[in-house]
Image (cartoon, rainbow, N blue to C red):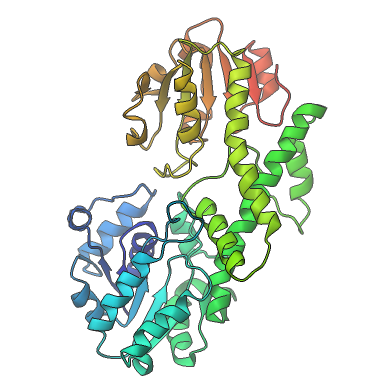
Length: 435
């Protein structure tokens, strides 16, 4: 099939590259010409393991075309995927849909025969209705089907999630569109019955409901970790004891920092905004958002307590600053809250992240990016394991720090408190007893 992915960001690029690897011809469109030039040179504007190799292979075989010419791509394609961003509006909880409707208003100029228009971007309930109304005014209804097909790709594991999806959700009541999309997705759903056709509004809401539930699990286990520290229980035992119950499941029950990234924060806020529009009180989701925001402050205060409120000229090293490993995404990462706060208290911050230096910290004095783990840890007073990159899981801290008195705050519970005690290293974790 011939596909058009509008927006060569995370969703559009990963989906486009993977669709091309299934044998489709894919036109990836983006108005950012620098990004298109970068992609045509075989380089990625995002960090996603394994993606660059698949991109180069399919680009070479001419199944993957990168362009800024929307008209060309739209008229070539049979199915058009809208994959532009839907960030939170400033001073509001609502999703900003301006990029969605900019695309839709351009599409009505270029569509000249039957097309399936698919919203892959995360959009509030009834957005598909509004898109349909815009195109209906242009008498395109008979040659356009508007479908919701939310993505469920995890950053760092997106290729696996695309090839082995838990489910493919297609929101449409069009028999024709559903038949075509089922054929498109057949290579990755044929081994199991994971293709789910529902209404367009239901598909839109499934995405938000899923992300809000996962965010709830994270906030719940983080609050349980707070209690574990008070009563002398290991949160890992609680997570295991809960997670083996099939009704609950073990995933997303790992205590640590506040959730972040491109989805959970904005999607929980947008869901609250939608509920308010429909006069519905989502009190649980509201509490989750509040708990998550408080988490950043709680962990920052714990750092202050570990250093006995004497932060002036203390050297604090952050191992990882992204919101999760295997991504360069800094959106809503706890480090964006913690590092400036600690820096204001006159601590000297060093950080290392496998995905590179972060522009977010460029204007902070005494915040330094280190290119290797040795220089990052050397002579540090406190090492904070913020992101559980594999590079940080088997470190000999004594050899790295080369200092008698230093402390580790393991925010991801990677290391064993008992082993740290045996090594005579002062160690703090999340929801576990310190030594």
